[in-house]
Length: 196
Picture 1 (cartoon, rainbow, N blue to C red):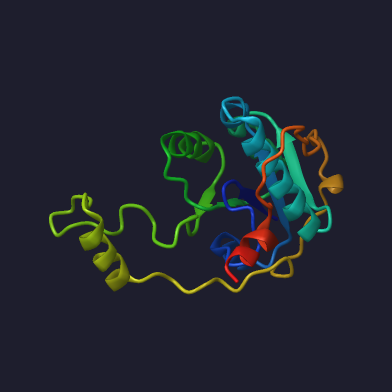
Picture 2: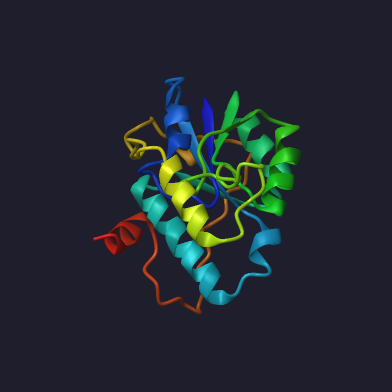
């Protein structure tokens, strides 16, 4: 069994993490952790957008997204153990909290980091001396020269999804709903519609 821990990348298309999880051929559980450390400082519209994005992802998975409320450091290893997952697949997180969180979780379970939420991962494009660019024009030239990977060919059908109702010993949370709404459409389909 494998576990895909969704964080910033609430999509199924072009998700290298999902490609990596599919390589074993094992069934996969999709997990999102409602982390108070990230939720509490967030305003109503931001939380509303997140929750509607989670609803859209859950709909794409035919209701097979496991949502758990708690500290990822305890939740992720507990869920991995509950399904006998050998690996937890993630996209890289470059924020200070995300890096620290992943380091702590990685001490308890094997994290497989594949891809990132960015076209080109932070730190890959630097000046010849290894320092980051401070002026956009030279950075953009180097970025274009560097290029980026092509889209990963992934969808809800890339793996066989585990039904969260079959996971014992872990308390699921309902996806909350906010009364304060954001104006933006949420979810992968809405994001793709913006590109047209």
